[in-house]
Length: 341
Image (cartoon, rainbow, N blue to C red; front, side):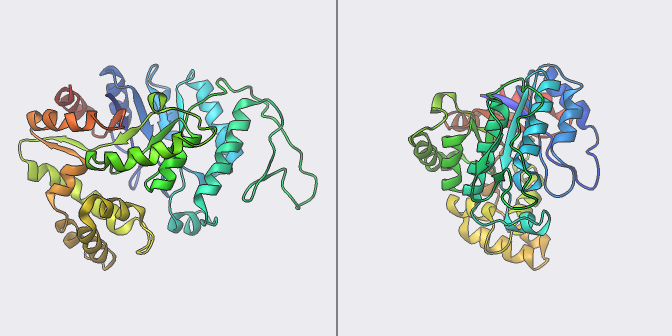
């Protein structure tokens, strides 16, 4: 199983020591470095900054939100970064949720799977550069229908470095996971658990079995963000992860549409997830954090003494996950990498 380093997105400002951690990850032999975006820092710029100080690691977005840019704008940035990095770029895409899509980007959210299919199809055309890019879709039209009536189908002026630049899809629900297996080169799970491996294998299998599926299981990548904290005290290590879990389960989405909440409900924590969401949305964040049991953390993370982590790692190695994406500062990466070796 490969190791990757996840920068995530900024909090109130740039993450201190981020570049040092990226350089250390490459020195330690990590396979990849990833960035993210929500509604603050963007995913592309920090990755380009990191890429300028590295020479080997893959550079991936986990994720770029599709509603933030038109498909061709995303394709332009992807082909640019791929050239500048010497063919190291991986484009990770995600639909996000209705609160962000409609509240921040001012774009409609309904039918995200159909939108994703059209979005990826346009990017593939740009990267192939075989003909002017056209699509008469439900959500995207190139050239635009209506308007001034003067739209012209175009090819990118830049010749993409790789026509097969890899595209991964972030997904949590089974239909979206299946879509990733059908039209993409990889799947980016969030809050993965070995206990849910059979559920996700079935969803991926459905996508692989569809006519025209792009990949097979043996050449499909699954980089998963997995918190790893090496510490003698399991409870204390888990306490460092619980606030982020409370945020996502309770506050990253509307009460009726929170995909992160649904992940934990499927994992057997429906009552916990409901309680965390209720407390969080009521402004009782400390209580929401306290309502998360350590077992939930252990199901989706690797925490505790190095020997415990190595023992539990075997369960992860038997799953569809191909890369563990770690977080932390430069000083902690070597310790974590050693525990996972």
